[in-house]
Length: 265
Ligand SMILES: Nc1ncnc2c1ncn2[C@@H]1O[C@H](COP(=O)(O)OP(=O)(O)OP(=O)(O)O)[C@@H](O)[C@H]1O
Ligand SMILES: [Mg+2]
Image (cartoon, rainbow, N blue to C red):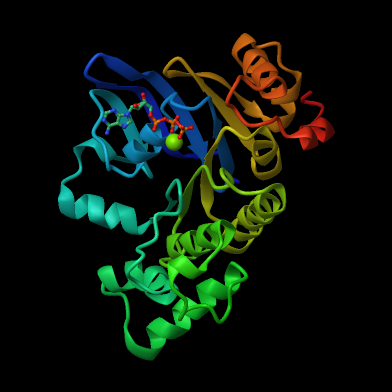
């Protein structure tokens, strides 16, 4: 990690009608680090990620990626930028009408990187990296939830991205599968030396995968610090978020007792 900001977000605003979702988000992500963005459901985490890869345009503020302002890029420039990003969408978002191999190879085909046996080789290499060697012929409907997330990760790293964005990588998985995905995020980070942003509302996943953590609250970043600082801070938004994790609201899932080991509860 060099300490240089590879992604610098300043004063980001976004509203949908009366719903002011982002109300001045400031966030700097350093080259080579894994930054976790925590926050309750509906606070705007996915919206923030979509702005970073230019899928949404802000009402105000700036997003500078590797020195370039994203909000002003035209379609061709955005396309170029997206080649440097790998995104694991919330819920995996695989194409059901395509095999696992075709899903993983899609970015390579779309960006005319390669074809034929070289494409097959690269697809198999990425599948191996996520522990799914030999599954290229399967269909998404034949996979478990955890396998789908792994295929989504294999697709996200198909172009050897500089930045990997994960949107809720462990949500909906049982604890064993979730742990496997957390491990995979860490090992992928080690192998590709990429910068990562992991969006989650899972504290355990945050502490395991993150170098630093930011908490979104009321449309802004209410706290930013190391995972260690997160556990020690008196920041009210953090304490409230953690307390809610300990006592789930009706309808919310049970808190993860493994957070104990980080002294969070
Ligand atoms: N395309 C859209 N049009 C209108 N409103 C939207 C759109 N996308 C998101 N929103 C609204 O923005 C708010 C934040 O949504 P977002 O999906 O970013 O939440 P989140 O923090 O990712 O939640 P979760 O943890 O449940 O995934 C919500 O109120 C949502 O209804
Ligand atoms: Mg979301």
